[in-house]
Image 1 (cartoon, rainbow, N blue to C red):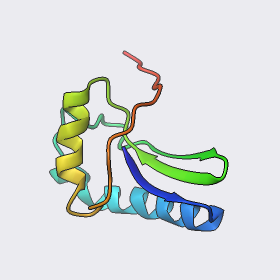
Image 2: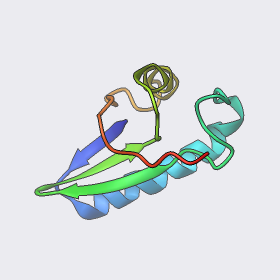
Image 3: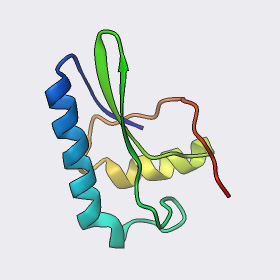
Image 4: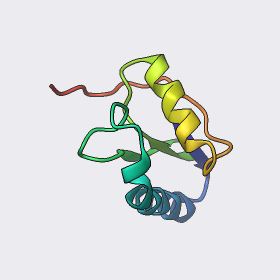
Length: 89
C-alpha cells in the first residue's frame, strides 16, 4: 500500500519514519490477522524520479483492502499497489 510519492528523498525518509512511529502507537488496535508480530513493514522504493513510501506486505487483495480501511483514517490518500513481496512461513 502506498502512502506517499515524492521527488524529495528526505521527505520520503521522514514519512517512512513517521509511519513506523505511528504504527508503534496503533499496533495494539490493528487486526492481528493482517499484521504479523513483526509489525508493519515500511519500505521506501525509488523509481526515477519518485521516492515511494509503502507499508505492509499482503498476500491477497482482500487483505490489502482490510488494511487500507485500517490505515485510511491516518493516510487518507493511501492506495493499494501491486508489487512483489517475500512470503515466509
